[in-house]
Amino acid sequence: MKKTIITIVIILVIVGALFAIEKATRVPDHLEQATTLFNQNDFEKAIAETNVRISLNSKDIDALIMLASIYNQQGSVEGREVEMGPKVITIADQILALDANNAEAYRLKGYAYEILQDYKNSIPAYDKAIALDPKNALTFSNRGHAYGLMGEMTKAQSDYRQALVLNPNLDAAMINLAKIYLNDKKTDEAVVLLKKAIGATQNLRLKASAEQILGVVYILGNDFKMAKSYEEAAIKDDPSLATAYVELARARFLLISSISDPAGFQNEVINIFNLISTANKINPNLTSALSLGGLVLQTFDNKVSAKEMYEKALLIVDKDITLSAAEKIETKKNITNQLNLLKNEK
Image 1 (tube, rainbow, N blue to C red):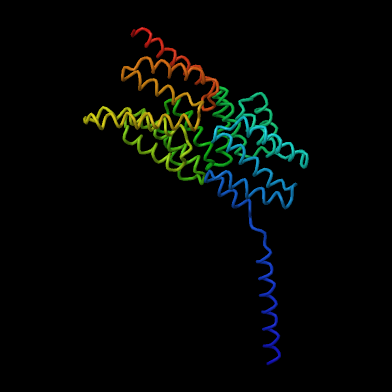
Image 2 (image 1 turned 135 degrees about the vertical axis):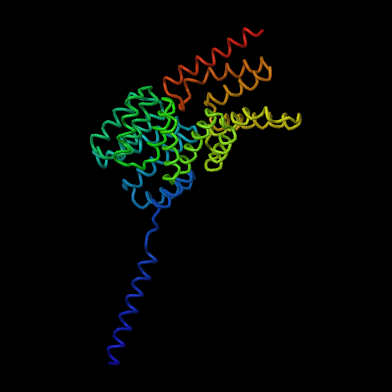
C-alpha cells in the first residue's frame, strides 16, 4: 500500500513537472492578440505582434495574411492607401509564392487594389479568390464594396446579399447593404441592418461606421438630437472616423437655431468648424468636410470664404475614396450649383 502511494505521488510530480515545462515553453498566440488589437484599431501594436510570429517562421502564411490585413485596414482608416496598398500586394505575392492557390492572398490583393482605386485589377483579384473559395463571405462583401465604388450598384447589392447568405452576421456586408437601402429610400430596412451590425461586430471601426450612418438616417428624418447622439457614439468608438466628425458638425449646425444666447451661438459656430477641421486633418480628401464648411460659411454670409471652401472641395472629389463613381458626379454637380448661387448673389 505504501509503495502504491509513493508511486502515485511520483507520477503526480512528474505530470506536474511536465505541465509546468509545457506551460513555460508554450508560444503566446500572437495572432489572437493581433486580431484583438486590429479590432481596436491599434494597428502598430497589431503589426508588432504579427511580426513576432513571422520572426519565428518567415513562411507562416497565417501570419502573413494577418499582416496584409492590418496594412489594408490601416491604409483605409488612416488615409495611407498609397503607402499601404503596395505593401499588401507584395505580401500577397509572397503568400502566392508559397501557395499558388491561396484564396485569401487574392482577396487581399483585391482589397489593396481597391483602396488604390485600381478597380481594373481589384475585380479580377476578387474573382480569382471567389473561384478558389466560393464560400468566403468576406470576399463577396469586399467585391461588392469595389463594385459600389465603381457605381455598379446592382452587382454590389448582389454580392452583399450573397455574403449574407454565407454569413448572416457579416458586419461589413450588413453596413454596406444598408447604405444601398438608404440610397433606395428603404430606410426601415437600412436601420434594421445597421442596428444588427452594431450588435454583431467586434470591430470598433465597423461599429462606429454603423453608428455614423444611423446618425445620417436621423438627420434625414430631422431628428437632429438623436443624430448628434449617434455621431458622438461613433467618435467615441473610433476617434479616427472622419465622416463622423462631419456629420456631428452637420447635426450641430442644424440645431444651432435653437441657441438664443449670442455668446453660446458664437461658441457653437466655433465648435462646428473645429469638428470640420478635425475631419479634414484625419482625411484631407474628404469632400463632405469642405462642402459642409462652405455651406456654413455661405449661411453666415461669408461668401468669399465659402467660395474658397467650395473650390477646394471640388478639387478633391476625384480623390475621395468614400464616394462611389455616381456620388462623385452628383457631388461635383451640387458643389458647382452652390458656387453658381454664390456668383448670382453678388
